[in-house]
Amino acid sequence: MAKLLDNSQLVEIWLRVQDELKKRGVFAQIVSFDEVEGRRGNPNRIEFHTEEFDTIPVIFDTIYVDNFGGSVRKEKTQKLSDGEIIEFEGIKVWIPVHFSYTHFGGGSNTCEVFTLTCDAYSIDREYQEGGINHFVYNFTIV
Image 1 (cartoon, rainbow, N blue to C red):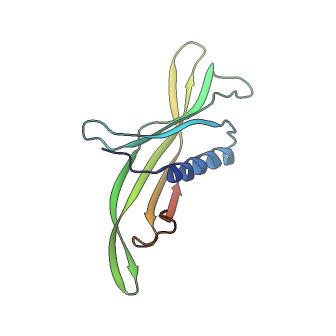
Image 2 (cartoon, helix red, strand yellow; image 1 turned 180 degrees about the vertical axis):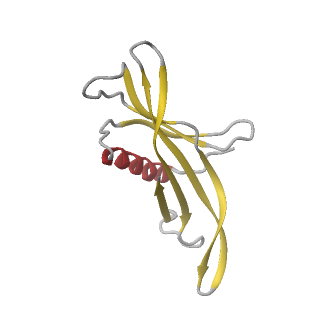
């Protein structure tokens, strides 16, 4: 399956993840963020990770933030416009964000920090300005 998100959509989602990490006191920068095509019928997904960072006191050998699973898929949705229900296709993104860490003894584990979901859809299928679609993003952080 081909990638569903364009670069501007990826950047919008990247910035939202980075902002949410800062709200939670994690100031490590995201060093990679990309949509990865699913294999064998599985949906596409976002893969990302931050640079490693330290805690005070230092309680892990290494710790960074990444994601575990998730999906990027097309989804039909409806909206009401001038009393008429219009069905259109949008993109649904689901990213579970985790701390990944290695203990000093060599074991490793993850812990979920939050889950970000995003619905991205075009404001109007017919409207384009300079060949660029204008998208609306509905973010949910749990």
